[in-house]
Image (cartoon, rainbow, N blue to C red; front, side, top):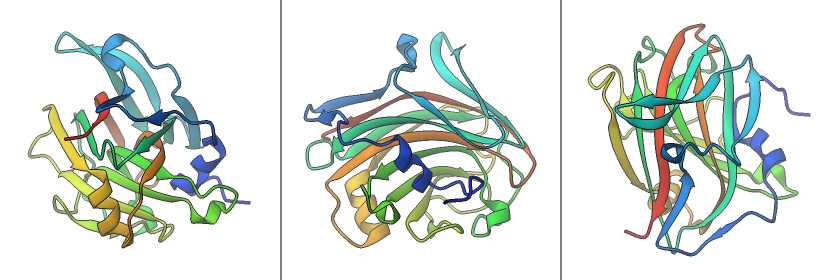
Amino acid sequence: MLHMRIKTPLLFILLICTSCLTAEESIVQVAEFSNNNINDWMKKEFDGITQYNLDRDERTTVLKAHSHRAASGLVKKIQIDLYQTPYINWRWKVNNPLFILNETEKEGDDYAARIYVVIDGGVLFWRTLALNYVWASNKAVNDLWTSPYTSNVKMIAIESGEPFKKQWRSEKRNVRTDLRKAFGREIRFIDAVAIMTDTDNSQQKATAYYGDIYFTSE
């Protein structure tokens, strides 16, 4: 049995099913927080509870996350065909980036904001893969590294530190390309997307905001 403190997407395998939605449109909505919609997002607790709730910011509804020495996430089961819609798009804002951590060690595996894409290993759960797009505290933007918990999980720093704290940042990544770079092979489908703000290892506090998340063909 996996230890519940291990914060890797391998635990999300319990929430992934073979009847996930298949994405074939040129735009695939994953999170529609701006429409006050948090349906289909399931909670997953690792160590303590990060508070997630819809909130208003700049006249738009967004997801607010607040963590104090806690780690829990939200996951949505949805299958995305990366041959059709390889680009993930999202907005996020971090009020207080974490103090500098060694993110290659378990003690530093905390992020003020992160978004997972998960590839289901099926009954062979040990084959589950995940790529984390993170707001890092120490790593440079575009750094790629392996999770200190498992080689099946890779991290990419999209933002880092305080230069843009309290500012909304719009992001766009080619997931298909990033997965190929991270794992050295072509991956067509992802099976879930997850959000997490976590501070259990560092015992810090963090407040972050997430806007809508969607995939596009271009």
